Length: 307
Image (cartoon, rainbow, N blue to C red):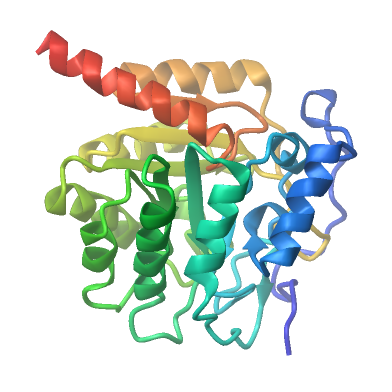
């Protein structure tokens, strides 16, 4: 049986959103065209499954973050709207369908993410590899960003994905370590940091990226500590966005962080020597990922010239 709720999470109705994070319902022709293409190719998207507030804007521009390995997750994170239960069977045609979508949308940059698949021997790493290879063959100029699970207790999984050479390897820390037991049960903060450093050890040429949600009850000092931990593990790019409660059965929003506070986080992160920072109430891991990747690449080129 599949469910999107977490019975152990606090039961609280979602708080009324402030004006600065309200978005219009998607109505554009581009949005409907993207939605139709995803349905025709039998592709899941994190945009839909995670109820992303930016779906209208991104899909109107033909940008969608494809979620591979099925639509059912093996974990119950208290912040996430993706269904939890018995996982789907892997679709052997998924890499080809993804490559067809990249071609049809003429994507310069594609973000590939997934559910957690703790039931698989490699955590789904081989499907990531297949998707990277299929996109590279179909659209050689498209840059590829992966947003992977933590692959805990899956020897060789991170190594396999890195060997396929995505342009960006993203793995989100999500929140501060004090809140992991409440928000990201089943994950380990130290392991996620290890994964990000391991990517750099294996291939220093791959950009590493991680993301944080705020408004879950963290303290400002804790966010700064996580940023320091990221830099200590050679993370290049950080995203910081407002957590939004998907349903009454998910972790409540403790605070709506102001735009001014996001500006402070952005300045602090750049001061800590991140190459790229995206921090705003509506920031998500793949929001404006194509433009951000170009800025990240230019930042590296400038740094090399300066050296």
